[in-house]
Length: 187
Image (cartoon, rainbow, N blue to C red; front, side, top):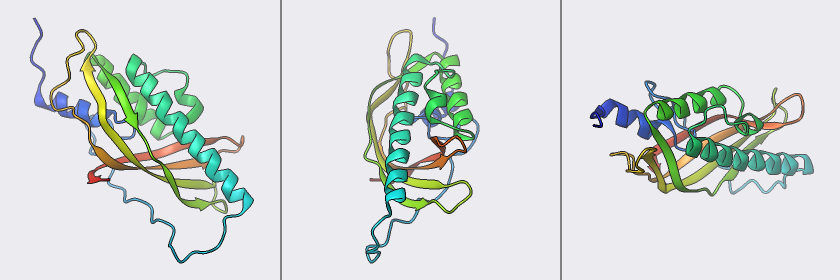
């Protein structure tokens, strides 16, 4: 006989893993604002170094989404691909969220659609960063109970804004180190 899960647990699971970018259970979602888009009046062409950074950051972001989808589907907070594309503090937040979902017997299934764009490149910073803005479509990405594949009540997805920061580390790798789902901002 399945025991009834509390409303807090269901809410926690809904918040916990939207591609790993929401805050973990018990914490409020990050309330960071989206990076300002490049002004239309900025006619300066990006340098080759900036274009290279943009490509590397977007590749890391795509890897992050794929790795977190795989880890969420398998309920594996130690999925090996996570460390290939994520760095702390986001890596720890994603692992905690996936583990909380696993402990409650749920997994993620379905499709998460993404349309990322680079909004800012800062190669002069220490460390260098690239800001990414995305319109995540999680309407087909469901949280289900692993045992019987029933949808977790209240876990329906939406189309919403997400932001991420890619950071270049001393070894030259670009990793996603910060991210937030802005579920209150549809796109």
